[in-house]
Structure formats: C-alpha cells, structure tokens
Length: 113
Image (tube, rainbow, N blue to C red; front, side, top):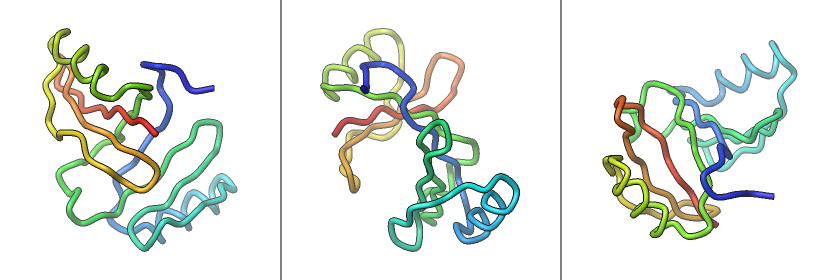
C-alpha cells in the first residue's frame, strides 16, 4: 500500500533506454515494461524506470520519487518546510507529479495517481 511521503519509485536518467535494458538485464536479470521509446519501467525490489526523454537532459542523477494521496497538499507542505519547486505539477501516463529541491539541493519528485 502506498503511503504519503514514502519513497515509492526511483527514476534513472538514460540517454539510451535500450542500452540500459541490455546492461541491467544481462548483469542482474531485470525484466522491463516499455512505455514508448523513451521510458522503460522495472520492478526489482523497488519500482523504478529509465527516462531517455531528450528533454530531460538536465537530470543527471537518479530521481527519488515520493508518493502523495493529495499532490497539491504535499506541495504546500514541502514549500512550507523550505523546499523549492523546480517543476510544477504535470501529468504523465499513470498520474501527475512535480519536482522539488531539498535544502541540500537534491532534486526529488512527488507523484499521485
């Protein structure tokens, strides 16, 4: 069961989704679900994915993704705690999410169904 504020997903940047699938499949036996040519999901202990969208080149490290039942309320809580919204709420296949930076500058995301 998903819970507010809990780590729910881990997204890795990937310039070449097929190369990532080949590496992780061969090295660890991971199995994948394709969501078009630019996104590949996995469920290997923690759900996650490889994002090969060329528009996401600015993201160069893994993106921890937290869950929220009420996305707007969670955004308000994060801003009140000192987080900085770096990508406003947007829709994607499966839900909506936004990105923020914590006080150390780490980028994270929060999603909701």
